[in-house]
Length: 396
Image 1 (cartoon, rainbow, N blue to C red):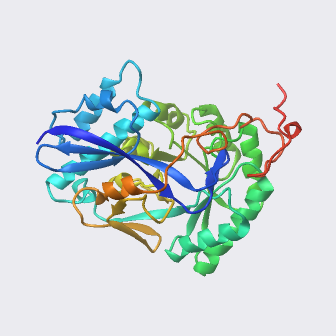
Image 2 (image 1 turned 60 degrees about the vertical axis):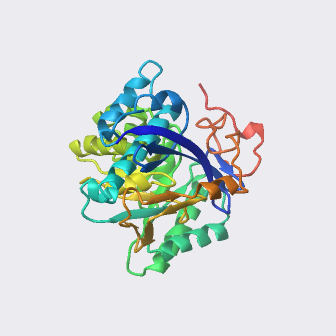
Image 3 (image 1 turned 45 degrees about the vertical axis):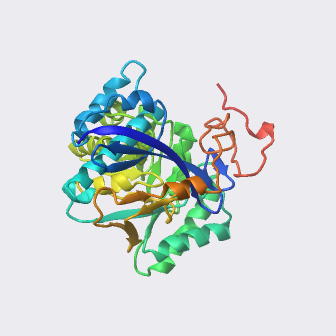
């Protein structure tokens, strides 16, 4: 079997409501979902969700190769971009191709990927994550009632701009989860998406911990700030979770070595091989690992085979437009099916015919960091214009 070519597509995830975080909000709830279809000379195709950036150059490392040698091909792709570097979107391209190759390998032997990787239990524990910072109270409650109806007892909300608002919203979500399952203590997490400084993060979480018990605070400071993560971990009761934006083991190593992260995360867009290696590194330091992402299907399969998987993020309960997944959610877990490979099928005609068209990242969206992020003295209410005099930088 040989790799012969690829096709790139872009579909959308339509949430039907505003979604975002401390950095911004997609008001229309429509998010781009790029994907890659890898072709072989025996008619088997594999699908990977992720970036298309520099794909022609990266694909040259695997073209004509046997896709079943996927871990070696992963390293070939890393070497292919040696000079320019593999960080950022290029790492997403490598991850998309890597996931597609795993899909092909499992299909070739007629097994679901979770079984091929050595998984025993097809159930993957999940937590609810509504990308909810743009929602009013009633919308927030309705969103988490839907998650609770699928048995989820743990939830993560977006915050970091206003501690009082975060407390109120966490209590609302806690009450929803409590009402849905009396006798079960719900779990809460807060994701601030790198919006705070070290001191701000300690004060913010410390204030919340006066009345709430948080499982973790996620990305409290910039993703590469080793001392900052360590300072926050020392200063609060909650665990510190981070890693979804790290691209390569070399970026995890200093954080783990410094004891700066308590829950090691890996982004779904970076691929299966990356996740397996991150999980092994974390396991060597007795740390749990948690996959992050909107459609983490590849990492769900991989999570069944690692000893230190903790829980996986569940965002939208519906798949992106034109995609069908052989999995469902019940009793607070993803339940993987028996379809060979990832169990992911793409209706390319449906993708092409979709009337929804994603827009490029722009100021005010979660993908563009605000000018004053990490340098605000006073709270900011999402979606409300803030006078310049309220956005003073911290004193030098």
